[in-house]
Length: 467
Image 1: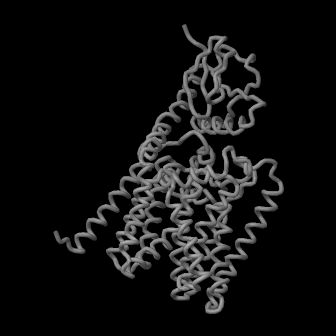
Image 2: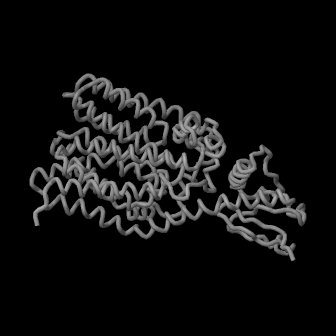
Image 3: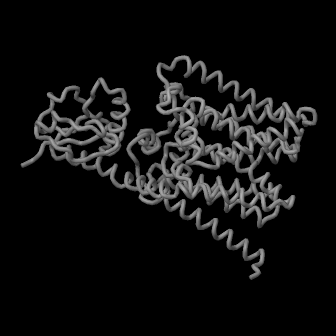
């Protein structure tokens, strides 16, 4: 049966809209705060206060990772959970819009560019990590995806047109990105050196200046990170350089959960061989993006940090070069090689659909239940009980848990009275309601006829059993 290109285009466009609508529905449904790093939001933009300078301390340095949420302070209703998740939905839409524009420039053929966009969108939507960074408010990867889209679009437009305005926008995006996550500075250096080393002889002046700027910008960040964080860090975040499982096992586990990483690695090897051995330098700008995507993942592998959301940036940055090479294979009449290669990525990603469904359900459960626990504690205190946090000096994560409970408690009561602490359970009276360690029972409390009335990921609630 013959289907016109116009119908194919409409069907593909409808599919893209359906997937985007589903993603936004997941992001917006039951919008509410979640126990954990959301306390950074509750202490700032949730109360119409600017701040959010990202993560600092323990060797980490990304001061602009969450900074863009400050915009919500100036938007009516922006301080609410709904306002934050609506903003996340907007950044998601903008990311796809910019990436779609980029792919249309790479592919040219409108229908084929829509196919590639639908494929990329479908593959990403099957990955739990991509949805996670938009369903929560604590991931800098969310704004990084948008910024990398802008960077790639204007970078490729700049090398094509040599317009200073395009270089300026790409450079501005790169500057912001550098302070959103530590490995970004390495990505920019890899992109620059790939082009400088292999394409210097034919390089226009504006492009040369641009790469030099990226390198200087990266070195400035690296110096700041080294002296402000690395040298003064007593202990590294996530226990860097001391993996709990063998390195090779961590790499395989991560790649199996995000199989497109295998494609990025394989494509990088092929392109490196083509450039070095075959002297194929026709697409150095795409090669730089591909090598940069690989370097971002390698950076986290080196420091033994394997949470999947770290690697989603590599996948996003690799989309333009992978689409470029897949499209080139198709134009060369090698469809039999390109199409199975493309489809295999989605087929492999389908293996994680059960994890995706369970994870989405888990977040929505937390959105419903976490704030209810805080409301319950506040109501109990209004009824005459005294809510306290048990501080155990032997527990290294104690301060982080207290910060979470204290911030949520203050936000709910609208009173700037800190949550009281106790350091000895013997100091408790029958009127106390105690916040105790997560996933840990207290025999001493149970012996005194205290029972658990709520269990959360960041603490269990005990109160005196009433007869």
